[in-house]
Structures are given as C-alpha cells and as structure tokens.
Image (tube, rainbow over all chains, first blue to last red; front, side, top):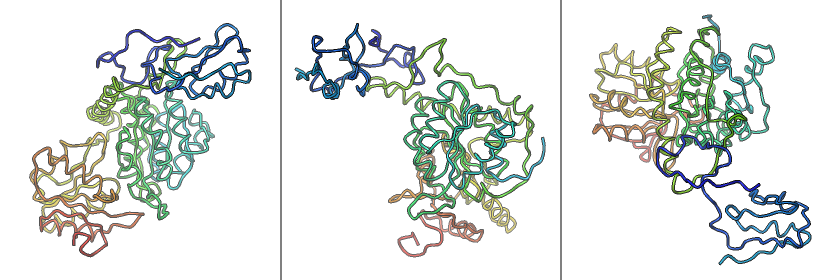
Length: 96
Length: 390
C-alpha cells in the first residue's frame, strides 16, 4: 500500500522529535519537487509482473489489485520503471 | 576492585566488558586491534555475553552499531586513523539519529605519508560530526572512561554517541597497574540502556527519515543542545563514579597548578603526563607555570578554559594536529573561548608529535621559556626558520 501522509506537518520546536524517529506510517515531508517527467502506467498494457516495483530505486511503486500504481508524492521521475517494463506499459510525460 | 597490569587498549576492553554491551562490531586496525581482540576473547571465554559482528570494513562496523542501537541495544565499536576516516560518512548518521554508540579511537596519524604512529589528526578532523570527544591520559582513565562513556552517551538528555580517544602506542600499547572494578560495582554504576528511540514491534516507528528546510534547523539545534547537556551529565557521572569507585575526575578539563601560574600549557591526551612533570620541575626553580589538560573537546570547555587562564600572562596550546593552511584545531577552539571571555593575552600554538614523533621534556621547557617573550605564534616543534614563526 501507499504510505499515508499525515495532514499535520510539525514545524514548531516542541512538535519536532529529538531524534529522527516518529510513529510508523508517517513521513515528514513530500519529496518530489525536482521531477521533470512523470511515469504514467497504461493499465491495459500492464501485466502485473512487478518488475517496476522491484527495480524502483525509491520504492514509490505499490501494488493495486493485480496491477501497480505510482506514488507521485515521492517519485523523482528517473524513468527506470519505463526502461524495465517489458510490455511497454509505462510512458514518461512532461511535468507541466 | 582488583589490580591488573594492563595496556591502554586492554584497560579499555576491561571497561567495556564491565559495561556489558550487547553488540560489538569492529574491523581491526593498528593500533586499535588489541581492544577488540581482547573483547572477542572475553566473548569466547564466556565472561562477556555479546554479539561480536565481524565486518568487512569500518564503514560497516559503525553501520552495524547504528543498526544495533536502533533496536535499543548497547553497542560498541573501535577504530583508528584511516578506519575512522572510512567511517566518516556514518558518524553524523549516528549523531543525528541520536544513537548513543560508544567508540574507542586509537589516535593515529593519517596518510600520506603512510604512518601507523600516534597523533590526533584523525579524531580532530571529525570534531564537527556531532560526537562527544574525550581524550584519556592514562590506562586507568581509559578504563574509567569506557564505563562512564555509556552512562553519559545514553542519558536521556544527551542521547549522543561518544568517542573516547587514546593516544596510539604511547597509551594503547604501554602497560600500567590499573584498578579493575568488580562487575557488581559496575552494575551499580551503569543502569541498563532504555530508550524510546528504537524500532519496536509493540510501538512501530519510522527511523532515520529526511527533514526538509522547514524543520532541519530544529533537528540540528536539538542535536547541539544534546551535546551541550553532556556537560552537566559528565559532572553527574563523575560524582556517581566517585561514590561507587572512589576515584575523582575533574570534568571537561583538569587544572594542574594553574591558580597562580603566569604561564600555562594547554594540551590533551597522554602528553599531559610529561607536561605535569616539567611543571613540577620548574616550580622547584620558583617558576610559576601550570598545565590545563582538556579532557573533552566536545562539549567544548569554554568556561573552564577562561577560568583557568584568566590571570595568566601567556598561554600555549600544545597539540598533535595541524589544520593545513591555518593552525592547530585545538588552538583555534581555545582562542575562541578566550576571545568570548574577553581574555586578550598572548597565546601560542605548538604543533608536535606528528606521526608519533616524541615530544621531549626539553621541548616542553622550551615552550615555557618562549612564553616569557609574550608573543603569539604558531610553531612546529623541531623545525626552525622564519616560516615557523621563529
């Protein structure tokens, strides 16, 4: 599953933990700001082989039913998933 | 307590055994090897119950220790010189993650030229990595620091990794009679490590995440406060240590005959023993000289230095380090402490002992003689000429 982002992002001194440790399932900030292109999955072509899930260096591809989906909050747009996808189900589209 | 004839490395290993770490991960490097060799023997003979992880590098040694600490284990590693530099990437990880790992570093020269003997350029180059840094003078202090280090690092107000430094060969390989506390005494001194900063199935947590520009400064500030908090915790640990073991330590610094001294040498590590002898000899001649030994460089003893030198006419910082293109790093730090306290007296820097070169009592006498001229200069011991401040 896609990790959920908490709505409240702490910025005040007393809300920030002392160590880089927080309740599981929470991440501090989204991290996708430098993406120029985004991978888009054509679910009709996707065969659910999970190669992209295995090869994604940032772990942003997650299972959805028998297919996969991409967490755009953390995808950096590197395109490795497109390159590894044998059925050609992933295309890179320019970010606008 | 029992007396034993131990080298600095062995004494530190005895201290670590008394602290009962659960995980030890290390890679051998001269002159550190014996401390972990000894610990592996303790595990082999059953006198220490710990996981000893044989790793393929120092980078892995500290990474393993971080992993152990992140599930709440008490972890120990040791290294030296190039090994510490190879670990360098992991040092701020341990500090920023607030993992109270203890490391013994055998101070040794860094290449090139290749050299296995002692100086302090390895640890001083890592002064900004977020670790507490202590410098032992002798084998007894090494053993005692091994015990106290876990207490200080693991204290909830500190939660900071701790690097205990022993001069390579001069301290790691020389033998002294050392008081070895009993396990009962050590257990009375050192509580079990308990933390919420760990991976736990009952209380799942996300560790070692990123923090963007919004919150990064706060994380770093809290890290800074943690290491500053060590000042009072070091005091607390030493009070507790004295109550149980009967030996007293003097906090971040040790002043020797500085109260009425006109000229003071500030130094650190094992060379302090020789400076103390020279101070005694010169005092017999009626000269008002003193020694200030820095036991800790992080947290830095700003107030202690200012108090010790405030009535002096001139001071010298003697160190086994050079920050190329500037001066010795300890000297830079000491000057900052004096400047902040408004103390404007001549302060000279003497750089010696590089690559294990002996510093003689004549050279130390020479420093006290030169201080009388009350000029500030940066000099390498044993090198003449104009470029050397002469």
